Image 1 (cartoon, helix red, strand yellow):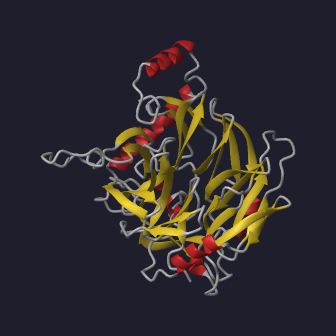
Image 2: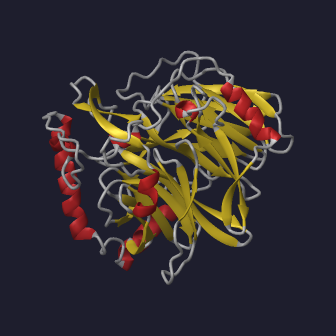
Image 3: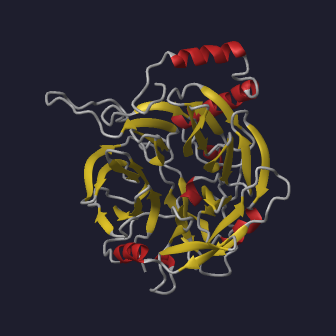
Length: 477
């Protein structure tokens, strides 16, 4: 059994990065050696990790439940911690800009903030900032905000102009200009449940998944849903982790911490076959992988003991069936290696046998994914993660509780505000957020399909952006 299996993976040209519990591991893809293990700079589970491999320096960025934004310099001698900043709210997404000089963090309050890779040096005589929220002290700049929990963010481009795509718990996908996030380019509307994963398909198309039984293909420039791909019947039978109501508390969801939180839910593996709880579908990661000049879509679901894949076709004609590769344990994360193979992280906390591996390599054979014996590089990581003797940290399946909207009886109730469904009057900011959501819906109904269609408006925005100075990443600021 592995107390803290790998929860997040990242890859660059030369390195593979893995987060396990409070630790980050770096492996050299060229030499196959385990370079270094970070010291426990984090006090809770690390959920998100990214790597930037520039010409002059390589940096690893991570964050997790303790709201620390951690930055290391990666070299042949190991991981050197450069900075640790306190984030005001619990992060839900982490991205690096193209040149890696800015860190984008989405949080449970619905905001996206941009942070410099390394904060500017402060004069020795300066006094710490006391600004409420802590963004000043962590050198964060607000990019945009939603009125609901943010679940995913990615960066896309059109005609060399960057855009930031954000998704939230209230079924919205928003395309905004970056870094001028206040300029909303388009909304992609039509999802009936939360959106939890996004994938840039290129050519102006976007793939989204979440709590619905379908993946949606969007033309993000126009906001049009081009088609849907049914996945629910393939995925749900593999979901073994169930959400069960308990007397505990919900995770922080953007509400004032000083207010009493509503009673919520926990997640656990249901060993008894008599349990009748319906599986909760949460699509967590969608990746597009190129193998022998053929593109494949690979995705996973929270609590599922399988990965799912199908060949990507631009046309909706003759959609290929969803293929499945199953495991004995729930999948936590996966990543495509440079040679087309996949590395899959499994939750061996729930292994029936001690020898069940927590990492599994997959290879392609005749357009099918098959299991492969782990090579020496992956085995080194497996051994190091397995040798950890500290406490088990964090809930691997919190998204099953925090993303779906449930009534007080525990049944899905889409389209109804989550505060109302929980049967709790939270007052204060909760009422303000409900009012803001209603105003947003009314505004969207008036503007969708009209926004940015007037040539004079678009010309003015383009002219304004062209006059803006460039930031450190080579994009308009």
